[in-house]
Length: 619
Image (cartoon, rainbow, N blue to C red; front, side, top):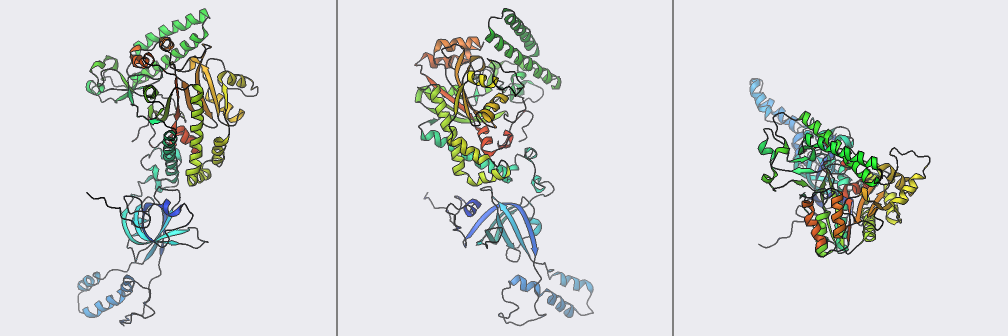
């Protein structure tokens, strides 16, 4: 089959003869090159108004055939016809005469259309390609449409017409004078959520399928798309290979995370429909958890009495807290669950789809490691899942993550790559989304452009966890809600002080205590800290976490035992150390938080197309 070039009208969108509003309103050279051309545009009505025309007046019953008479110059056939309607009605009354029945006269008069006053419609439309709107002018005598069809907010319209440049004192700089209306998608005004006054972002979350039509959400989406493209541009430029990792896994990559279990068994055995994805609280019995709490409480008391291993005590306390929280979740589930449902702990996972417990992945870095140890530097980009019911403006159940693994590299290499990548994203947005940044600067945060420029050009301080603790302990006039102590994670409050108040720019913190990082992070020579880092950004917190991975088989094997992990889950992971081990490192960027940073918003649910959080999955 011979390839045919797409039809071109003006400067069209490929595979469509429609021209985007961005092409018309945001020309790269600053010239409106399409002025005077006939183009097709489409979009959704943002605002509208109707201006009634003055009725056309011609000399009554002027049946002359002088087409050049002053009264007819510049008039359309429809206008002339409508001006003659009174004459037509008079002729009908004369012909019928007084003797004719009123019914006959009424029937004949009904054949003559009632005059409809002509109107000019002014529509502001937006097609999502840019923040600006284009004005479309529709003369009802040229392109017949009704006000009820095209005026309501949200109406979809596709029109063909000529682009006109307006005078400098006009609010609009260019408009389209419609010649044809090719399509009208009407709106049920009483049900359309955006027809009312501008809705706040939290209200828009209730309409995830409609909110992309708002200027705010469409601008955020374009920024998100640009960051997506920038990610692939950066890593492809520096020789990384893109690898797609699975979202279903039998391995807990963190060793202690809350996971969604994937199973096909519940729907087959329960009398009521059960969800496919459930958390750990749904597959463990309350009796089992209470027994574990009793056992772990004894371990904690034993460590307290001995007072010889503070690190083990902290780990045991954290483990006990998580088990208590799990018990509370199970109790809440049992109260709300129908009596007829089957308990998940009675299921035989040998009969499940995968033949063993499987989960939605929390991280893809384990699988990415296997490719790094075979083809070099690799990266992945996809959704990651955590069954964490905590309500937070920085976390939802499904978040997109950029993950990187580099063979033959150490902690310093990962830190340098993470910093370069972060700066690259900031600069890319400033260079490629100028109009979107103007919009978010006006509507959300006036300082956002300045902050991104500063983060692009400034140098980042690198401090150890120990140095961070020392800085925080020297703050006499600030009372932190969480008491600061060694061997515990720095809270969002601590990180905020370091980035927002102390350094006033991004800061990289490295060499964390081993108790606060996953088991696979490389143990440092001091035996107390591990080769891990976090890139902390003002107003956002931690955007990137990374580390050098433990390549030594014996050390990793010991760490798995210390964390009391199921060994059969990690045998394949240990194989990477058994067979040709190599020093390697990597990091993860929480992509949704990067979008949050570049837009100046404060809630991650507003920058995710379809956010999934506890109790919220509307579509």
